[in-house]
Amino acid sequence: MNTQNILKYFGSKLDVKLDDSEYYDYELGTIQNDFDSDVIDFSTPIIYTSLTIDSTCLNQPLDNIKPWNIEINVPYTGNTCDFTVRRRTEKGWTLDFVFSKVNKDWSEGGTFYYWGIVDELNPLYFVDNNLSFSFTSDGKIKWESYHYSGYCDSGYTESYYTASGETPTLCTNGTSSDFNITITFERYKEFHNCDLENSGGVNDYITGWTVTNGLNVISGATEQISGMTETVSQLWKKGQNSRLGILKIYLNGNPIYKINNWEEIIPSERNSINGIYQIWGGGTDGYETSYLNNTSFDMKRIKYFEEPLNFVHIKHHYLSEIKPNYNVVECQSICNDNI
Image (cartoon, rainbow, N blue to C red; front, side):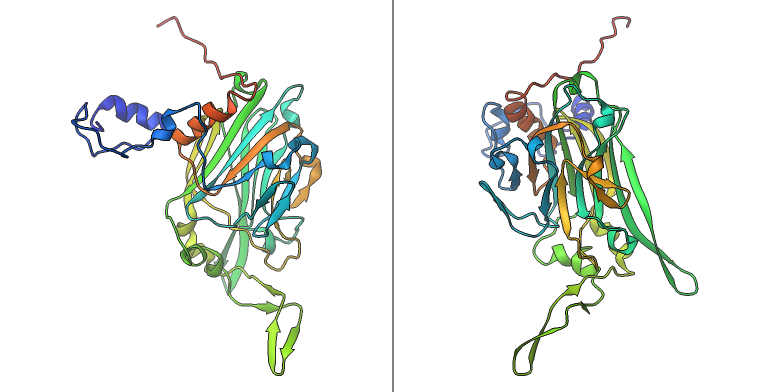
């Protein structure tokens, strides 16, 4: 059925993958398990094994505790929450938010998500080490990250640059009350086990270990080195292809933004002592964390999946879990009667 032009057209609009396994407009027989039957039932939410954070475990509104800081690679426990956020996953990740804009202006939107090093002013520690998503004053979503670079001219000189982008203006109807924002990153390459660390990852930018806290003598001549730090390699750029993928942003289950060849951020502490975090409901102002730039919008619920959900599953999630439980007004387009 992939040969049908209408499928090619709407398939590209919906961002789905077309299947070349069937070449007719009908099935000659039932092929068991050749599709995901769970997405057909909109009355039953799908349980994802990759769901790492569900704010319902907090037993209190997120707006009462934001910004909510989650240290990366460190176990988190609180109320009924019990999880660990990994700094890199096999294929990517998904962020899911339910906001309320009631009695709020876009100028109060601010930064609603941050990932990376916190309260750091030294560029050598925060480049290739942070990512933020914010609402702009004109009703868009902006992403921003800093990237490590360098050039050879009588020796190697380190530098960095800022990457950023914006969605179109979010529709007025779809953000007039509660609204759902979903952001996904899907890496082109899927890694497992040690490939996660060695293919454009952590071990690719560790050029050596630096002792910061001296030696701890265990017994006799046996010594344990503690307080080691990570250092960005000059070859970091060569591993960029292993970090590239597609960033997508959805409003109320519908895709509104897509960028190819987007580079993932793999946070590390480097020489900083400040730690690496997810910050939900807040973010950065310049290079350092600033709680003056937190979003003033109410955050009613957040979810974090350690996999990139596709359009079909995001739409199912919206129809089965978000729309029935929150006051969402759909985006409405004006019909053109003068054809």
